[in-house]
Image (cartoon, rainbow, N blue to C red; front, side, top):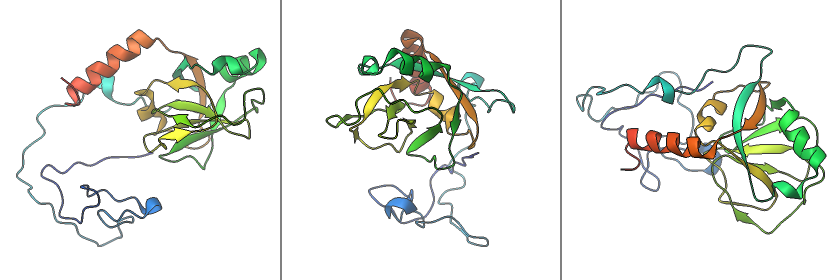
Length: 202
């Protein structure tokens, strides 16, 4: 669904807020503020900046989408508003094979399936984290991705494993997913290992 290409030393490009990244949706120009077009050239600042020194371990590479007809399993941890939903809706959330909607993007993976109507419709806005599972006024859940907002005012069932977002981001619309109970201790351990490898923590 998505591929990434890295340039050691960076590219010659205008920067917005210290980054050459562009987000056309938000009007951040960055590189070009839009997708590249055929024939356009971008200057690589330092092609000799260095070779790839190591490979990403297989365990840290996002899992490929499941074969047709199978559902991808996404580890999930219940949140403090879980009990605001009825037992029937909580069970439906776990039993349903949700389908990823075409309107999904870097902000949220939107899901189609049964409406979960029992939870509170609107709450005071509260902070969100990567992977938060929020149920909007329509009763449909969504999973917030890396470009999520900082706060949200709808009920939150919980959150998925942040590392599972990498695989979820590669799933095309129409892919079926199922939420399965996650193990918080194992998730924390894997996240710590991930951050140490990528130099995000010591």
